[in-house]
Length: 187
Image (tube, rainbow, N blue to C red; front, side, top):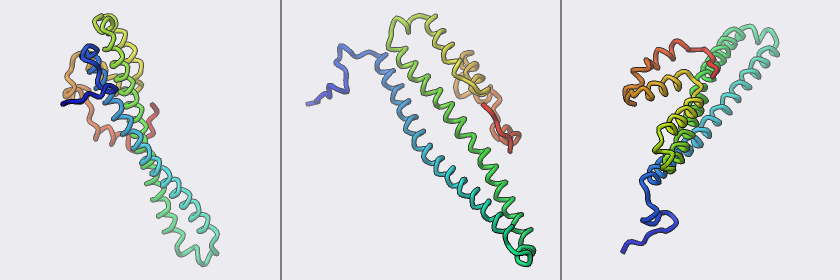
């Protein structure tokens, strides 16, 4: 005998395909939220580590400067070179961390889009009206702030299939990363 959990499963008369679509979209949104929360913790730990490294570098520079000349002069150049290399690596890492900020912004836009779509499809009158879909697309288009997001949105609205979008958008991530190496991107 199958026992239904009334709190989770709608009665057969209340079941609609739209509700099932909305439920699956909510599942996707919840999975993204969970993954973002976990990755936030990891990135925060990395930020604390880099902050500690930066402080240690400053303390080492101060310690080197405070040494008496007869102790400082033989090692100062090598130590300063090593500290400069550490500083350069930390700067590069901070620039690379921008990917995470950009990723979380983009995933936030996807989560909002999924939530909006879930609510939208549950309203049959709205979901069956072409002009309402256009309003939804217009509202979602406003979310996208980066060039990549806007380009992907436009390609999808033009009917390009999702697997073909990266090629159609000319996204060569390795070339773009190499071109931007060391740059701070504002978005």
